[in-house]
Image 1: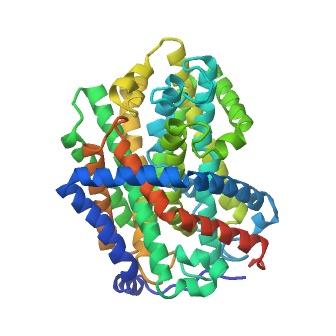
Image 2: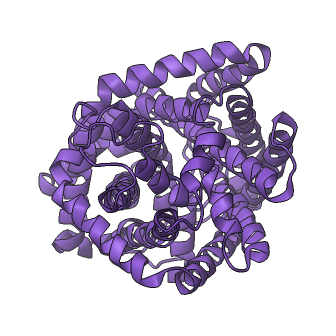
Image 3: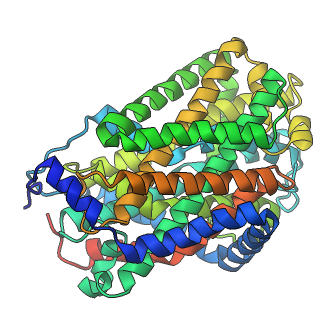
Length: 526
């Protein structure tokens, strides 16, 4: 049984945090990320080429491991959630939650999905349906048919629901349990103590492990911001006739970076929680409105059929590293998704741990795994289902729009054909900006925490650290969108995601092993 740590005065805590920078983490991570930003300014073609080679090398060589560990994580969180282990309270039996249920869920939901569901909720199902980049070539499914629509929905739900959130939530649970119940450091290296003991938190190992985690999330954030810039730029062009390009992307980058930086600087309660709650409310309104004005029956039918098709192909999709489905489908979509989710997982785990004190493991999994996964099913079912219905019935040719303008272009044409489009489009743009801001401010805060010695979960890291990371990430994202768009328009940011995921993949594998040892081999710490 344990209680919440005693608090010193806020002034003393902040002074202590400012003085104790983990130089072994901060300096090498910033050298690489800042060096990447500088290289992009000096020679953007070289940065793009390095990222491209890393993308292909990591996903082709490690695709099998991504697929195996994702399935293991899914099975593991299912066992932990629905067994008696779910009754364990993070922080001990007397620990009391700080955040109410609604704001806790808002922070967990919006802190994790960033711009992803908005970017691909319409675009990804349509890309599969139309075989735009060759995704259907090896599936045996004829593009443009009813079967293609079911495949498109099933594959989208597979990529965006229960498996990726299992990886997020498992990493967060390991960090939370080790920190709150086993009294180890709040760090990624601390989460590996069940495997290696306290020696993993001494010497050079914590610096290496935590630096890899910082690099992964920095590249993952740059990838998400880059996708957001490309999507908002295409929306401005399609809706308001302002051609997208480097100047538009630069303006949007400044706007988004300013919002998430300000939110992070204001702290967890005054900044992140408020922005997350606002963002979640926008999401809820969009879902309700589109469900009402969209083809409701088709949405329900296609979502149900898509889930069934995924379950039917569970093992083949789950363990195919690209040999069966091909590179266009598996490498450029599923493995890219797994790479960015794993890139986020360790640092996102720290954020999820920080906001989950006093909750049971079952509650933790409900908020961080089950409900976000169902949210994604609803989002892709409503947005993707409506888009597929319109494409099949000749309402709007989204396939041609994406072929002509890139992988993220279909959303705005889709929204322009909705009733109340003049209202919905600006709301979606606001949701996009808020989505990235809520993910980025939580992650920038986590990076700054990991760069600080012996920081507690209820402390705020130094503001200068958050500023440095925020602007370095923004520079790399802008460069990759402006100068490495590629065939899909977002190739450059996909390269970054793969690099981020591969840099921390083996750390995540060790976290999964830590979870197995903690919960099924070691004595449970109630």
